[in-house]
Length: 148
Image (cartoon, rainbow, N blue to C red; front, top):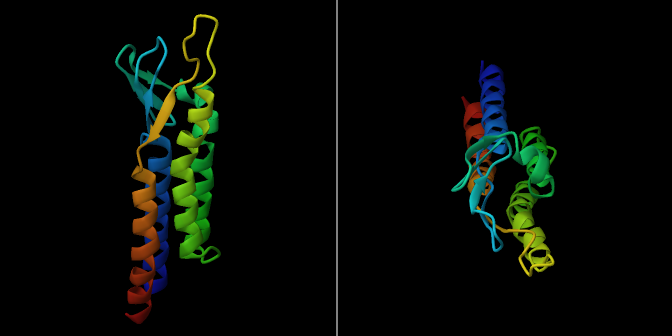
C-alpha cells in the first residue's frame, strides 16, 4: 500500500516540476535599449509592448532556460535517491543565477547607435523555492510513508 502511495507522490512531484519548468516565469527582462521590458517563461512571454506571445521564448531565450531542464533532471534523480539534497539545492541556486550571469556581460555589447543589444534578466526564483520545498519535505514524507 505504501509503495503505491510513494509512487503517486513521486509522480505528482514530477508533474508539478514539469509544469513549473515550462510555465513559470524565469525572470524579469529589463531592456536597456529600445525594446520593452518583459516577463519570459519557457513557453510564453508577457511584455508591455506585445502583451502575451506564445512559443517565442523557445527561440530567443535558449541559453537562459536550458539549465531549468537540468534542474528538472536533478529533481527526478533526487526522487530516485541518486542525488543528494545538497546537490539538488546547489543546482537550483545555479539555475536561478544563470540568466543573470549570462545577461550582464551580454548587456555591455552595444550596437552602432549606442543602444544595448541584449537585456538584463533578473531571476524570479519560483523554481528554486520549489526545489527547496522538495529537498526538505519529500524525505520527511518518504519516512512517514515507510513507517505506516
